Length: 334
Image (tube, rainbow, N blue to C red; front, side):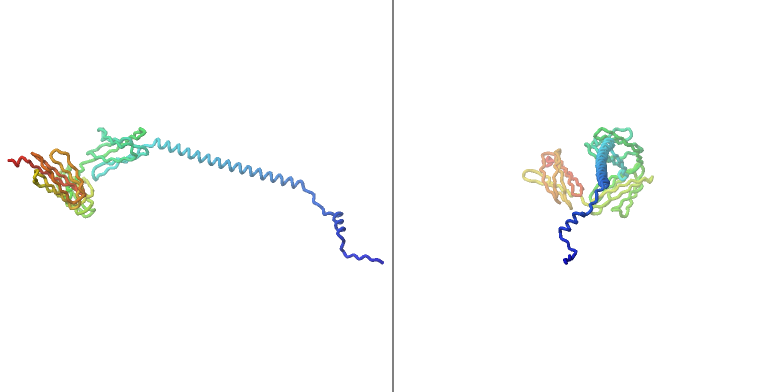
């Protein structure tokens, strides 16, 4: 009897057959899902286009606003500059009874004039400079100062200010040998004068007259000098200046004789340094000689007849000495 033993292994033909007879079930496509995905994709693409469009529009609008702003700003600046007027500043200085007129403008200043009250206009020409400063003297009493400024485009502005100058004493200073000469005058009587060096202790000079003229000694070197003149009404006048304490040049002139005639023999010395020397003989034009040394020597031949010699020597401190000599050669024949 034949038996068939089942081992569970079937041949490949059977497996293929079974697979063929019972193929794996395929899921049918969902057309609704596909349609939904296509719609979503199209919607996203549409939104992106709108966002990009608005972004570009905003950027273009920004550039337009910036350009418009710059243009508007330039237009405003041009209008402001076209209508700008000169700036005038008028300052009073009681130290020397003067007025400082300062004018500034974005364009050139063609001309400045000033006048006291209804008097004659005084002209200041500045060749279209943008900044101009001029100092003028105060006048006595109560007065109105009018300053007129004309700029290069023809625009003109006027400024007026009233000033009162009472019986303020006047102060004039002159450099002299190792000191300063003070000259002062007051319409009232000068009561006293005070002065101090470098803001140190004050020295008082009693006056009791309308006029004062005197010399005060200066310390060696560069120093600040403050002077106050007070009249009997108590009205003060002040002046502060820088003084260099130094000696003036020393000039010596002698007659000398040579075979060809007579000479003025000139010797000039200075303790610091001679800057220049001017020599004039009779009506001839003065000869300006640069020295830059402590000594100077010259011989000037005399002409027939009268000889008038004048010598001016200036040192590096700005101090000047003057010497005059005269000699008539006809006196030798008498």
